[in-house]
Length: 204
Image 1 (cartoon, rainbow, N blue to C red):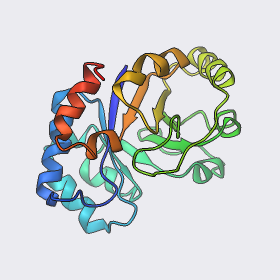
Image 2 (image 1 turned 120 degrees about the vertical axis):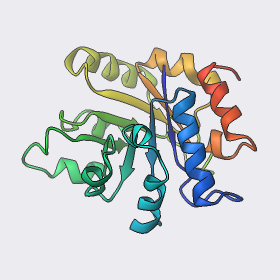
Image 3 (image 1 turned 45 degrees about the horizontal axis):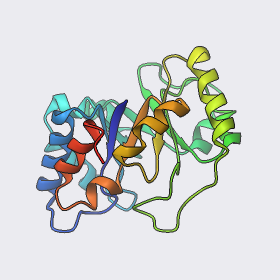
């Protein structure tokens, strides 16, 4: 199981931009494969300031949500955009760019463009960061779809997101996910790096 961390959607309470960037880099240094820098209400300056504070080797493992033009400027891993944006495209985007998106139902999972490198499927479990946000999945159908894609699209990463904790690792891996993403489990902990270590060690 590979682990991905999302940034806090706002400025984490008690953290400066510099401190948050340090935590994001430390997560990658610990063994998380990627960081998703997602701040829906942040302006371009805030995103660029965070990227500036990250060493180049960590920026290469960071995906920016929105601001696709920043990939070339800062050398990030790729870009994340809404599913509807990709579904309306009539041509394959730049093949040198790694694209990812989020999907929220089995219909979208059955019809996504095959050039996407990562698909976040959420919320698998009730969300930590969005109280009351959950979805009823038919896990049997979900597992069948994901297992089918393992053969058809071996280079596509399917990422479980939403309410993920270390004790879910075996379950989501059995469903067919190659990656797990965490947000609230890390940022709502008083020590985000200790929470991250529990993920990597699959500890409850």
